[in-house]
Length: 317
Image (tube, rainbow, N blue to C red):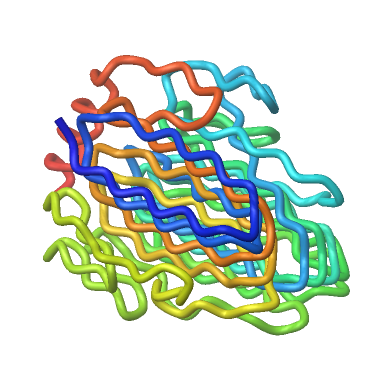
């Protein structure tokens, strides 16, 4: 009932659990602790830069760290030595880029096209929660986004129905109100490393042409398997000496950039065709769940939310 291909390389302890009813291809390479978590009902891309320890944690309505409640497809992944948290909420199109040397906390509203990029030399924690639209310190349905950049404490509040771009610089305490529901881009440029493009409803990212079902290496919702060459890091741009954590939501076309020589964790949820290329030097754990779009320690729920979301999106279009 499915076309899964799991290629796990040596030099590490991998655990691969693949369920049917989906077409995923997970290529996990050793010498790394990767886990790619794909959150459905939205188009998020979380790219964490190198020289750091990121933690990916998805907490649902009840905001549990380890246990994820239903009504949302979250992944629970915890990694130590990190004080950052990235919360992604739906109904918005934000792009948050946080750089290292600090404690970042980012709340982004998904349900559309979010992209969270956290830079290294720090300890980041990425928490993505779709469908529930409720995050820690974030009001649901209001599409808030709280971004705290490094070397300081910036807080960015994003409100809907507009197209703002907020550039928060570190070493300061700024607070900016931005309106999402369109094409917001919150770029925190501490220590460098900014994302380049935020893709609006057209789901267009740098070097990524979705909607046409053409990603760099992934074509989800088109049910096209992607061939990945293991032990080579063929994703889009694979950079070593980094600890990347990637959260990608299916039902869309995401592109994932993973760097090697770090600790990555990758959870790919089906309902589409994600291809994840993870770099080595650690312990990989790849868990692919089908048709329900759940991650590790997730309790599936109904598809009514999905249909509702799709209907709303169609209405907006």
